Image (cartoon, rainbow, N blue to C red; front, side, top):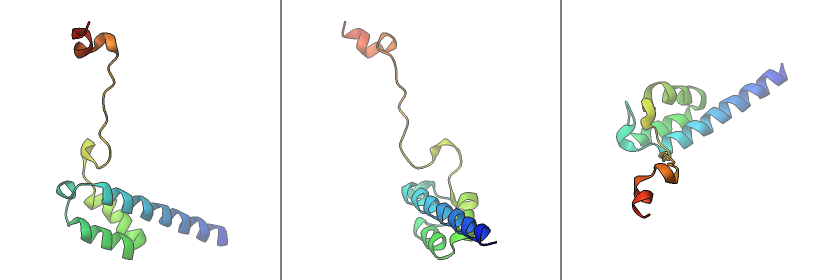
Length: 86
């Protein structure tokens, strides 16, 4: 029984940390339902429920989530800028 409780605490802690980082990195204009500061307060003070609420109701949908933008890597023989230099 103690193992289940410890496992649950680890899962809730990891989910809370993920939600705090994800909310912090997301731009204010992309967050749904509430302002960023209120989502952070909810996630911190209501760890399990606040994290799940962020994932369901606050997190932006689609590929426009916070974080780094992916750059497409083009090989030199397909890159028109590189070919112009030749």
